Image (cartoon, rainbow, N blue to C red; front, top):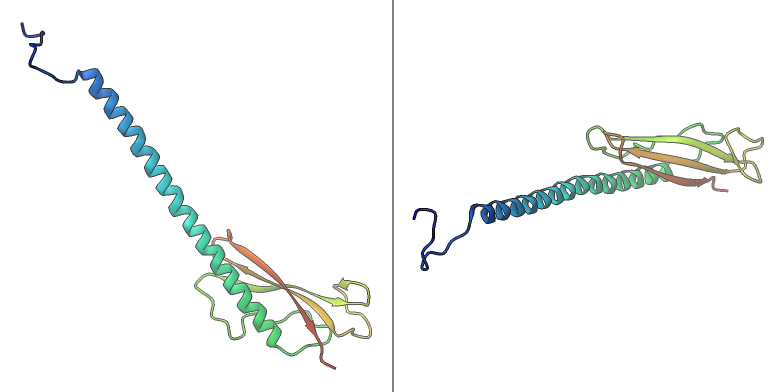
Length: 138
């Protein structure tokens, strides 16, 4: 009589309980994977937003500096406080030769330069570039 149920006894079998626990386990794993992805993407988005802010500050710094004939670089960090590990550089200064921007210095200087400013996160995953056009006042 041990293996038989009486009419008033209700309950789940061991197989039903194992299936329930398996389904709940799969659901918990899916939720944790989703949370992990959300946390990782949040960090990536934060780094991209920081890079945009830093490169904008560097571009403003370059804009405020006086025009230098045939300049090879400008300092994008003047007056800019960088977060720890971030870099802010000028990657190129191209000069207008009358038809296009070139790396060599035309003679005479055409009073127009294209300066590329680059901000990079410590890991190098988030990089932003911006071009600044500098014009020599007449």
